[in-house]
Amino acid sequence: MKFKWGMKKLTFVIIPENAQRAVVKLRFTHAVLYAAALLLIGLIGWTLAMQSLHLRSELVNERLKADLNDKMQHYDQIVADKNEMIEKLQNEVVLLSEQAKEVKTQMEEVMKLEKDLRSITGGASAPVKEPVAAKGTDDQESAVVQGETGLGGIMIPVEATEILKLSDDTSAEFEGLSEQAGELKNHLAAAREELQRKQRLWRITPNIWPVESRNVTSSFGYRKDPFNNRLSFHSGMDIAAPVNTEVVVTADGTVVSAGYDSGKGNFIIVDHTGGIRTSYMHLNQILVSEGDKVAKGDRIGKVGSTGRSTGAHLHYEVIKQGQSIDPRPYLK
Image (tube, helix red, strand yellow):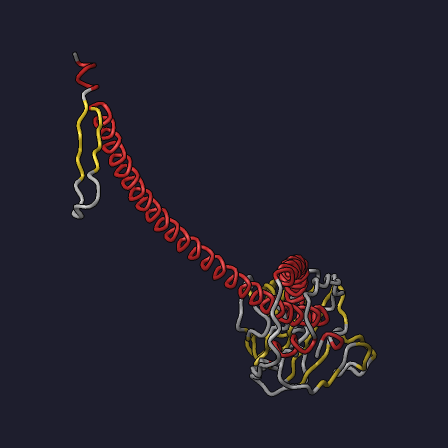
């Protein structure tokens, strides 16, 4: 029954407005009409589906474009930051190169001072290795030294390889300066020790005059005795000076004896270590006591004419390893 219903036909009559034209009759079975309806519905559904897919694709494309733009902006910012960092590093390399030149100049000045110090102390100046020179001209280095500020010239872009080369040269120069500074530090330490040694030696060497007067009335050596006019040996030097003229010790030391003797009068003996002693005789007054520590230039007594003396003067004596020697070579 259903099959027969599907085979039934429907007739569609098309009547034209022009009566002279023939009437058109279209006959369709129910099955054809249902098939056509289903086909139309399917076509509409497909069209709607395609339209929805197209809209969805456009939305996805828009979203992808937005994401792509965001990422491009992010990458552009990263590239800009990288370029800024590279430029900053390049500027720092150039600055380090200039600083290396300044340090090199200062190091040369310190080396000159070290040589001067060596010459003062009398020590031999050991050679200091020269630092590796960075790429540059003498004019550029002299401009740094003189502090010139005039700048100019044609703008010549610098390649990355040149920056790397400058960085390597600067690094090598700093390494050379570091090595040179280490050697110089050792040399200066040795020079300081030598200077301290010579300073200590100077402190215990009786090389200053014991009184302000330079009037030597009797030198070291053989002479006629002032009391009996006979040949005798004078173990020191006599320096004439007014009574109560200050007498100073001629080197650092320790007072080992201070007192009175009929021949020496009031006297002081100071030990300066190293087998060196000094003696001060015929004093009017003694200002120190046995065991006192005295420093070069300290007042220890006053000029007088005590003991075996013909007048106000200081008998000054230098004793080395128990033997009296001429004080004159020590005095400046």
